[in-house]
Amino acid sequence: MSAPGRILRAPAIQALLCQVAAFPLTLLAVFLLARAGSAPSYLTAALAQGIFAAALSAWRKLARWWLAIGLLFPLALLGASQFAIPPWLFLVVFLFMLVLYWSTFRTQVPYYPSGKAAWDAVAEQLPQDRPVSFIDIGSGLGGLVMDLASRRSDIRATGIELAPLPWFGSWARARLTNSRARFLLGDYEKLDFAQYDAVFAYLSPAAMTALWRKAKKEMRPGSILMSYEFAINESAPTLSVYLPNTGRTLYIWHF
Image (tube, rainbow, N blue to C red; front, side, top):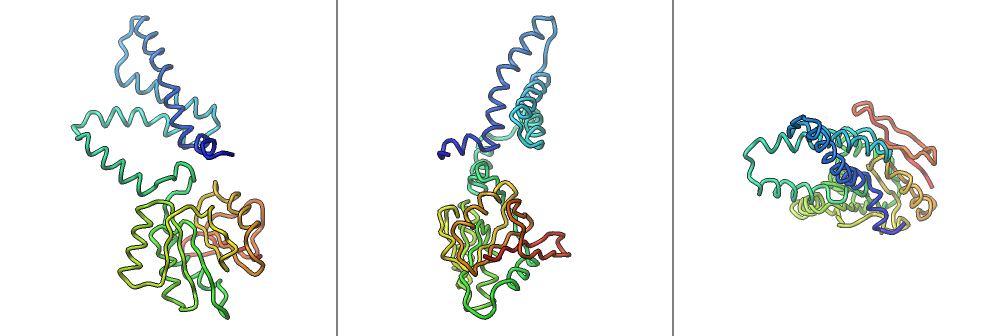
C-alpha cells in the first residue's frame, strides 16, 4: 500500500474525516429543527455533530474509543469556547503535542515508558557470554538504552524514535551524561534487523503484525526479539516472563 493510502487508513484520519462528513448532516438537522419551529442552541448543534460523527465512526468500524471521541469532541470545543483562552495558546499546545507524538496518528503507537522492572528483565535475557548489538525501536526518552549501556561495556545499545521531542530528549541526556548509548531519529521500518542481536519493542497491538513480518524476514539465526506487554498473534513466544510488580509480561522469540 502507498504512503498516502496508509495515512488515509490511519484511525485518527478516519475519525477526522467522520467529523468532516458529520458537519453537513448537522447543518441539515439544525435547518430541519428550525423549519419545525424549534430554536436549536449551540449545545444542540454540538450534540448533533457528536452523534453523527460517532455514528459514522461506528459505520467505519473504528475502535469503540473513537466513537466516544467523535461524540465528545464537538462538546469539548463548545466548552472551551466559553473561556477566554488566547488563540496563541492553542497553537503552542498543538505544536508541543505535534513534536511529542508526531506520527502516532499513523503508527498507533503512543509514547509510554517501559520502566525499571522491564529494563532488568531485558538485561537478564540478553546473551551474557558475548558482545551484543541491541536496539530499542520506539525508544522514547531513552531510559532502557542508557540503562543497558551503563550495565555492560560489551553492549552496543541503540534506540530509534520517530517523534522529534522524545528523540531530542534522549540524545541530549546521552550527551550530557557521556553515555555510550546511541539514538537515531527515524522510522524503525527502514532499519535492517539483521544488524542486531536483540530487538526490543514496546509498541501497541496495532503494530505487532507488521513487526513480526519484518522480524521474520530480517532477523538472523541466534538473534532475539522482545516485546513488552504485547504479544504477536501470528507466533507463540519462545518464552514469556511475567513481571509481578507491573502486571505486564515480556514476550521473547528466539530465531
